[in-house]
Image (cartoon, rainbow, N blue to C red; front, side, top):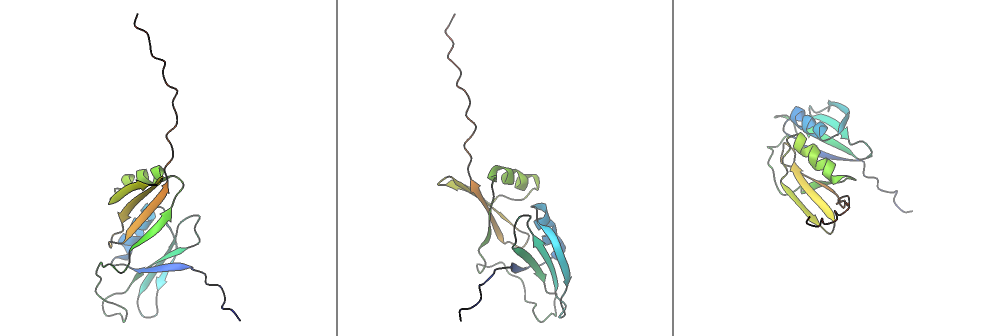
Length: 144
């Protein structure tokens, strides 16, 4: 009998300050769908992005908790990746939110823009570059 299908439902990341991280993710459009205290004393906050079924779970483990460990930004986690329909609107949203644009390039018609959350986790927002609207060319004027 084959195993049942694997369904990826959420990603949990460790954060240093729940409030700070929730504010960051809400600034870029996530909505809180739940929060609570774990039996062992940890705290979690569930976030979703409208239109996506995948949940981001922010986890905080206070000092003395069995799952606590000093937080260090490392290379174990690379980045979250998001596809968007209007990359230019997203760049404006990041700038309006005073969120740093750490990398920004275009390759093969796809623009990739990176920012960081408060704990140093990279977020990639990518979308197709739209062609600028065409403008009618002005006819050259003859000198009079």
